[in-house]
Length: 238
Image: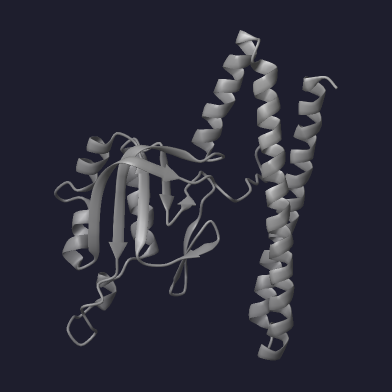
């Protein structure tokens, strides 16, 4: 079969799988909401159902990843003997890295944040200032991207254009997944620029440190940031 036809077929398969995964994600979210509304006796069965749905979603996501890998290999083979196609393939690969669709590695910085457990409510007026909050993460991520970071992750959750960093009671959720302290933020970019911008006098990290939060920043020549594991959804753009 012609390679272009195979690539087209695989592309269609990817689209179908993506739609299926979106439906599964919506189903999981609805089921989880329902779990919180019912009694404990009903919750047991609902949680089992949620786990089954999540397992099915994970299996379908693995199939999507395999189809995407096969499509990528076919594109590379089809472009091998054509300079124009090769340039397009390189451009697609670069765009996927920027969008978060592939794992990336490079130089950058690693920021570690942790609550200060050495203080108690009896010792300070506002113990909340000694804790890491979701808005702290938003401020740091924005500063990293504004300073030139090309890829950022928080506790191995890739930060992309659709990422939500939200507070759910005492829990922080990123891309819908719960994350807890210690928080590890990885950023790929020019290490010196990122490092000195983030630790500068009067900067956000310095204010967090002065408030009592435990803050550590280091440069690294070998940082790996995973791909975005979610699904891009757009309701309004055409």
